[in-house]
Length: 415
Image (cartoon, rainbow, N blue to C red; front, side):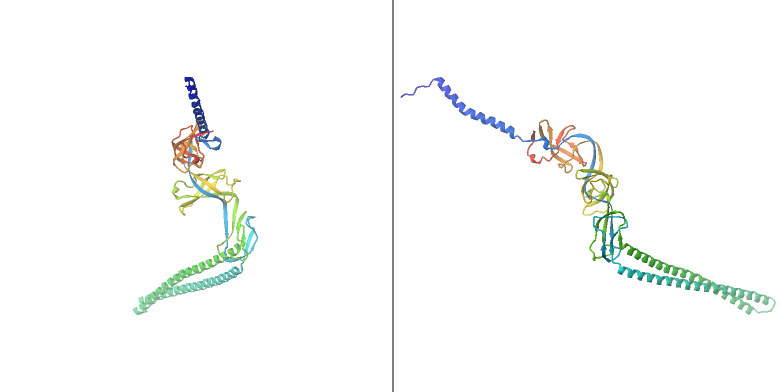
């Protein structure tokens, strides 16, 4: 049977049917692709990020340090003698009042040494009195001899004058006159020598007596110190405080100067901080400080800076404006920010974990329904804010959360 030739109309219908079979699925694929692209486009939820406004104002530039909370006043009680612990009356953590006995040391050896020091002091006292008496007697004898020699010299002078008179009336000779003059001169020289010896004796006696008195005073001070040490061996609380630590090892030996207890005033606190020695000279005593402990921020001032450097770190103490804040506890770690300068009319954004020091950062600027990545130059910072040097304008909004997951993107849709 011979095929019938298709009409023009039938040919067009057949072509249209073919186009539809190919076009409809293709159009569906295109529509689906556009839809999926819209749905899968990178985006962020605004509620999930922290956004900061770019603004101008005063920026207190600060440097960061690490610190810990310590009692404002703390005292370590050390052993005044080498001994051993006999009794312990208080436990760590207990509150003690001034004068409360904390522990008792063995004083047997100390008492023996004390008695020996008392005996030695008594001996030195007797020696001092003996020397003082003997020296006073010797000087008195010499002074009496001076008086006797002065009288003898006067007698010699009278004899010499009389001999001159007799010689003038022919009752004596020139030899007798010369003899009387010689006797007088010898007596005069002997008197001068005795007076000089007497003066030297007084000076040497005074010096020796001073040495004896100093030795006696040293022995007396040593005895007083020994008595104080024995008194201190009754280990008492020096003030109202909390007993932070006590050596409660009964029977154990303790060396002189070793720790027996630590007492802390827990009604007030301060912060001891450390910072790199590269910041030496940028702050000093009196500099303002912000201290962050958990979610709490306290203010204070640098009390003092320790002049020595250890392991490239310097230590300083911070006195808090509110040293009795209820959030303070011994040993709490703190972030300390020391104010080193103040900048007026600075462009700034919030300081968050993204900031690690001056330099360039890729930050996301919010613009309507999109966030676009932008390179921003940041400068110095405070504990709360960062200085913007380039890349942002006053009034813009920037995401300050960690956006590391989008480092390969340049634009994000805000959902």
